[in-house]
Image (cartoon, rainbow over the protein chains, first blue to last red):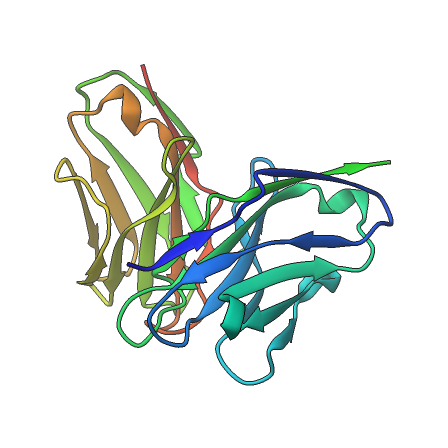
Length: 116
Length: 112
């Protein structure tokens, strides 16, 4: 069965430090992979997505993610974190026949706190 | 603002009751998705509609039902509510079945 694992429930980084959020997926074929961010009281905003091609994907707000098929991973990175990045981050895989961008299986999320 | 509108934003109701959550998709979007976000289960896909027809079903309870109307807005009906149904319910919409989905801000349901 398809699944997404985010091993870190909560991460705290200092402002200006680099960030890497881990995501591992289980999927039979080439997956559609996504990272979403949820700020308190807000909906989900898409940061970036991967379907095929270049395994390093650039997103909004300075985020990037790298797809590694051999490790079944899609880790999210940012070189320098800003206080406004404090939020909860969700990795997701597109489910459904032929892939889907709306029928998604989400990980449990990683809550990011940023120290001044 | 994603352009997806969900009403109401907050809802408090008693066990055993029935509620209806409403979603207005972005203009031009034909597909609507419903999700439930709870502390226990995380974010779970419930159901998808495309142009009025059910397209995919996820972990939706039999007490829950949804529909998409000709004007493309969608409603999620939750009946015989239990305490465990307390959650944030999200609607998302996309132009087509395989294009990027945009999420609304959710309806927070509290069952007391």
